[in-house]
Length: 155
Image 1 (cartoon, rainbow, N blue to C red):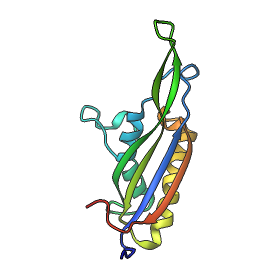
Image 2: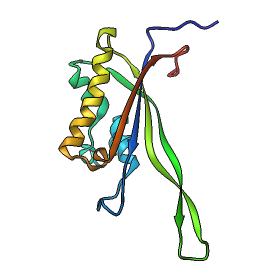
Image 3: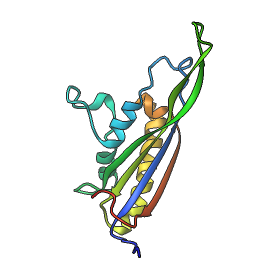
Image 4: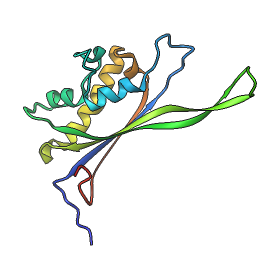
């Protein structure tokens, strides 16, 4: 029925955020996380406001001349949170982003697959220890899941 295609390798990166607006003066923006991990920067900011371009950084860390990971899907992980109001209603439900998921297609050699996954985790840890950018510091947990798909999801 289905055959595994070992040429189509995938990496899923799951990030969990921890953000407390009372402790942090800067505004946390899930969009900055999206831009960093998808490798995009707004046109008016060619350097992406200090955002690391994760696909480019991983390519450099793995010593590749070409792309090694290609972002395919992105999704925020939302959690309904009850917010008390002082107005007419007693409360409202707010859908807060508590994490994000990124699906990458791995384009490198099989022998570099594990090295690439380690490079992703190391990059996040480096940025957290540097304290910049602040939205990377707010990542409290990283989970990397590797695998093969029965069918190519990028086509």
